[in-house]
Image 1: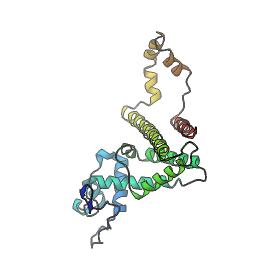
Image 2: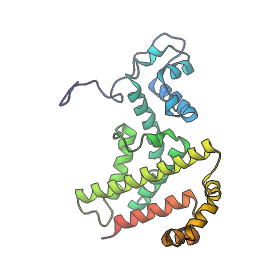
Image 3: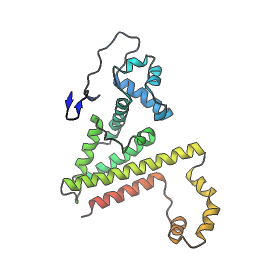
Image 4: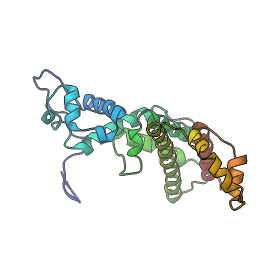
Length: 238
């Protein structure tokens, strides 16, 4: 296919599946993606390779290249499977309910498939299911009271995406850190309690002291929900 950027092959979603072959193990992109997701769930993206997927499927690695050209295409397929799940949140009559549902579904998907958070915020996700989620989100936000034109919509999408990526990555990072160190956030804070108390008693950090002593200690889900609503309130304000 000739493009403004030179010659390029069709995207993986537009290329037809290879013709069925007489082989002991039938393959499809759906089956390859499902196997890759299982491996990534267990070992992370660093533990994912075409060779490992082929071994899991009981085929030679070269057979997989009939279905995906490279690792990037494999990741594209995997990501779009996750967006299919996110898309199940569906559309709601009111714009805010749609955005809330999609946002919570995105967080839930990332918690179930932590590697997904590693792929947020990079290059755009353009698979059919990702585009469908993007369309639902953009269409919903376009109905927000303060979104009057395309510039407003682009800014609203940017704010929402920045929040989702930051919040989800932070939560996943904390979960990973807790696993690797054997200490959750509460335990880490407790271990530094004496030091922090001494520092706060100097009086040099009065605002930090208020946050530590008097601030509400919400769990991750409550924090996500509260901050998401704050973002939507900002988008709504005129």
